[in-house]
Amino acid sequence: MPKAPSPRPKTSSKAKSASKLPGEDSTARDLLQEIRSYADPKKVPILSSFFKTGKGQYGEGDLFLGIQVPPLRKLSKKYRGLPLSELQKVVSSKYHEERLAGFFVLCETFQKSTEEDRKKLHEFYLKNMKYVNNWDLVDLSARDMIGEYLIDKDRKLLYKLARSKDLWEKRISMIATYAFIRKGDYADTYKIAEILLRDKEDLIHKVVGWMLREAGNRDLNSEIDFLDKHAATMPRTMLRYAIEKFPEKLKKKYMLAGKS
Image (cartoon, rainbow, N blue to C red; front, side, top):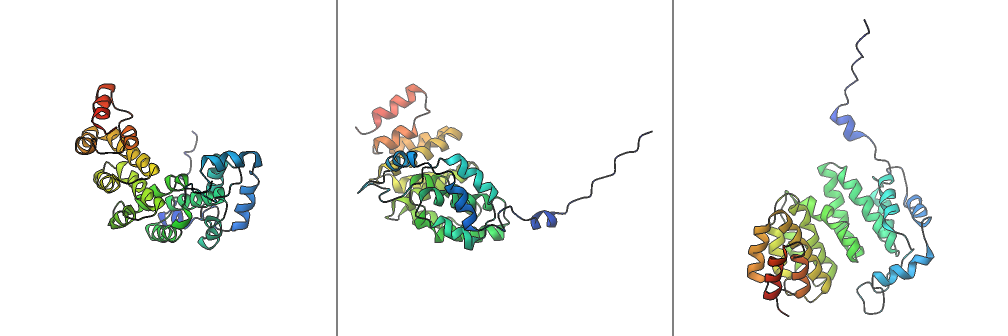
C-alpha cells in the first residue's frame, strides 16, 4: 500500500509578510538602464505629439524616449519593492516613460504592502505629485495611490484636490474615486463631479464623464439621478462620455437636454 504524502510545512503569515520583494536590492540605475534599452527614437515625435508637448499645450516641454506601456509594466513587477530613496530618482526623471515606470513600481509595491507601508507609499506619492503631470500618469496611478488608500479613511484630500487650480490635481481627485466605484460606493464620485461641472478644461470634462459612466455601469439609476439634475448645464463632451453606454433612446433624451 503506497504511503500517504508527507504534509507540506505550513508557512506562517509572518513569514509571508517578511518575504523580500524582487526589487528591494536594486537601484534606480538598474531600472533606468533597463527602461532605456526599450527606447525607440522613431516613436518620440509620435508620443510627443500625442501627449501635447508643444508650446502652450498641457504637456509643454515633456521629453520622451519612445517606449510603449507594456515593457514598463513588465519592469514594474521586476522592480517591485525598489527602495523609495532609489525610486525618487526615477519618478523625478525628465523623461515621461521613466516617471511612468516609477509610478508603476510604486503601485506594484503598494499592492503587496502592509497598511503601515502603504501609508509611507501614499505619502511618497503626495510628495511627488508634481511629477504626475500628464493624463496617463494620473490615470495609471491615482486610483491606487490615492483612491484605494482612502477607501477606509477620511476623504477630505480629494475635495482639496478637486478645488485646486492645477489641472492634474483636479484629474487625480476624479480618478481616485474609481477605487470607490469598484466597491459600489458612488457618493464621492458624484460630489466631486459637481465641483468640476463648470471646469473649463477638456481633460476634466472627459474624466468626469468617464467616471460618471463607470458609476452608471454599476448603478444606472444613480447616474440617471445625477444627469436629471445636471445634463442641461454639463459640458457637451462630459455628457457624451457619461452616456456613451446608454440605450439609444435614453442617450438621445440626454443629448437633447444638453446644451448645444
